[in-house]
Length: 297
Length: 338
Image (cartoon, rainbow over all chains, first blue to last red; front, side, top):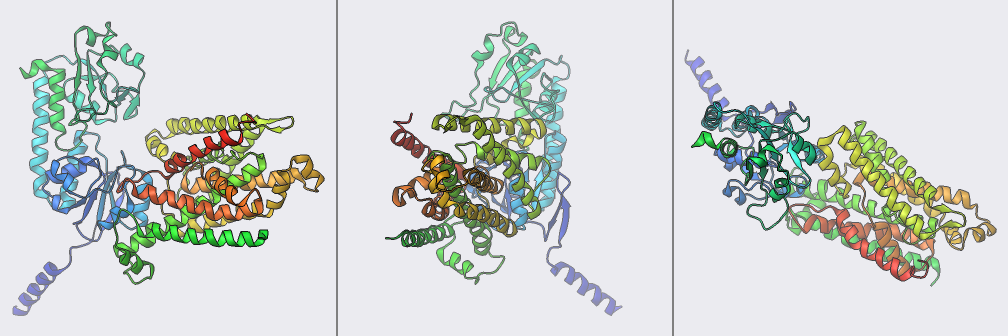
């Protein structure tokens, strides 16, 4: 009996002294990613992944980010490896990452191939639905060993999303034209998270039937769909650049469009809405206020 | 100095220059390694998995080799196209041949060819076919009784280039819209570390094209005297043009397959070399191989470091240097002809 206990104690000691176990996980595109252990040196090539890692309180595991990872402000304290399309591989290697988190929306296939050649595990995320966003938060919680922080985030996210749904439910759903970029006109299609957000916010995207996530659209087609609300995303907030500044006057001239007749042309700084992390709900709420001001009185 | 000794002297000097630029390129980069660390990695005294070893040997070294090869190949292709058309403004990108090759690469990628060596050979074949198609198109458009005039040749090149670039956009938009952004980035011309096996293939194809052009350098000199004169001096001009044409397309296609279209290397380098060495293609072809390597390697070292840690496309830098040279050549040499 004593021997048995001794063996059990020895085994337990062995198990706890054992280096973290190797694990194989599947990323959000279903690719297998083999990790020698739970990663402790993560480089994020995706702004909303960076934001989520901070929201999970796992920032001590994040060693690198891109130039576009600007939220939260503390993220700027992490070294950058360059842009999403053109990161510097050597700056990335110098950070000795044991995992790179990237996305098939914005990073390049070539970068993934180079990382594979360097034997740096790469985990791809793909979150263009609110449900996928919750899934992404949970996966990042697992990957960073911050599982306990997941539920508070996703529960709060779900609650606030349901709050918005409930608030706008009594009202008729206006046809919404969402302008991501004014010139050339770019609008969200069915696979875009924006289309779902418009729906949750109590609107019906007039471009929600398009099969591409981001669609180069013709102005006349947009006008022909008679939007009742037009939302222009302002990308120029906080910069002196005129690129991406909404051009309301371009729309004002279409006085026969219901949205213009009703004075429902809104230009909003929606840089939060275009951040697909946990804070997307703040953008959702501002979008709902624009589409259904009456619901928030 | 005899031609042989001048060549040996120029090659020694350029070789030294290439070694120097390569050394600088190996020691600088956004990973900010100390010179000692790079030296340790190069000497093989750093651990295989260490940062200095991976950055120096797996990232910088293959990229330095790719830059030297691609630059050399493009400069030699430039000399060849210039000799062939008797026009110092001819160059793979200006003639639209690079765009044709890029179209070939995009078609190959749509067929699912990737990065393995066998796939790389397939991609290079498509690029070669594209380059041949574009160069042939330019020739057919520009040829007139009495030869190729400068204006029509340049215009034909511009038109063919625009056509193939638009064809790429159309093709990608129809087939794989999500990749459009990546392809637009690729079209600017970017060097990346190439796997060893593919690098060997790259070198073999480039050297084959180089060898073919070098062998006809003397005949290209005679062609410069005019087609009739060359025929009278015993040159089979049709065969010469065919072979040099194929070799230059091979060089362009190979470079585009491995790095994407990079412009103006074939214009800047031969122009500078002519200023020093004169018009003799027997000197120009071998020196262009080294000179092109120096130019593109220096440009890529800049591309890696000016906006670090992000990277500029090297094609942006070569075009930035090349466009003024183009204008200078156009205004100074061809004022009379235009």
